[in-house]
Length: 128
Image 1 (cartoon, helix red, strand yellow):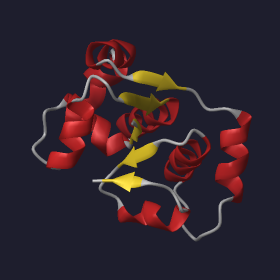
Image 2 (cartoon, rainbow, N blue to C red):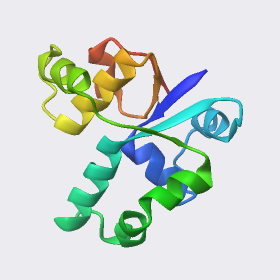
Image 3 (cartoon, rainbow, N blue to C red):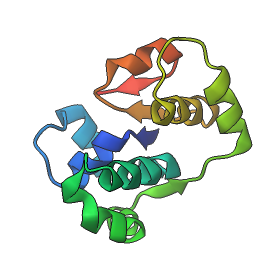
């Protein structure tokens, strides 16, 4: 199977946070699964760190690529197709980070690993 980690899922994994569900932890630990982290996640973490919403994230911002490599996660870049779909997806969900992750999940046929039920309105596969 192939998965895309939502930003909070990635952070909780890196911080060994107990908030991860058993199912989420299982797919992240599966070495045979394709586990992707989007450049959207890097942008969201850096942005929230800059404005003071993620004070603890300095080390993650400074060593994001190393964290991906250490965990065996694949990078998923944003393409114009992702951006166009994100802008056109129906619904009232206004968070641009979430919209981009949903578009990537849909176009790349990746199951989004997230606790956020707001993604259910995007007609994508979600696991938690």
